[in-house]
Amino acid sequence: MRYGDWEPFYEAILEGFGYTREDDRRAARVLNSRLDAFDDHRLDALLDGETVVVVGNAPSLEPRHVTEGVVVAADAAALRLYEAGVDVDIIVTDLDGAPRHAVERSHDGTVVAVHAHGDNVDALRRYVPRFESRNVVGTTQTRPFGVLHNFGGFTDGDRSAFLADGFGASRIELHGFDFGDATGEKRKKLRWAWRLLRVLAYQRHEWLV
Ligand SMILES: Nc1ncnc2c1ncn2[C@@H]1O[C@H](COP(=O)(O)OP(=O)(O)OP(=O)(O)O)[C@@H](O)[C@H]1O
Ligand SMILES: Nc1nc2c(c(=O)[nH]1)N=C(CO)CN2
Ligand SMILES: [Mg+2]
Image (tube, rainbow, N blue to C red):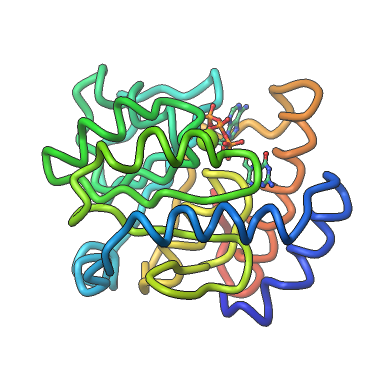
């Protein structure tokens, strides 16, 4: 999704959660200053024309049901897949789910999309220097600048699907998404994930299942 199409959703999210653009910008500067440019051709090579399985971290996730396709794992779902012996191609994280696992996998060659937002500056400062930087692509939810991208998306799960779409996935399947199975702030975030995935499905003329 282009930034101009994303911005109205971003503005509604800022308002709905009480986040500020300035805090997100500040976090983005912290991430941008700690990363080198990522070679986007690697994401093309992994995703273009492929069936992509986006894996969320719902309690109902059955890692053994993930058996085919390019696997994009949202944050702590990556650890659950790893523990079940399922290969993960890309991890999408804001460093609050399983950050040490993401760091380790980057050293094994897994591509990790690290997201900056106003509430993860401490995690960015702490973990970004530990990654294998060649395997890290930085993302922001504000207007992209420097080496950072904005493919659209809010939670790690829906952002994973927007990443797959942006790099030409021919089909996107969802596993481990259960929008009803959470409470409080998490539930509110999952509602946004659901809305944004519906928008993406509509744009792609595809059922995301
Ligand atoms: N029932 C669910 N519980 C948790 N995550 C879910 C669920 N259904 C879908 N997901 C997706 O799995 C992603 C990764 O989940 P994880 O538990 O690691 O949460 P998280 O890292 O705190 O998420 P985020 O940082 O995006 O809020 C979420 O971003 C969400 O998009
Ligand atoms: N400012 C801010 N932005 C976010 C946050 C958050 O807690 N604060 N959480 C996200 C996914 O959990 C994505 N974006
Ligand atoms: Mg997270």
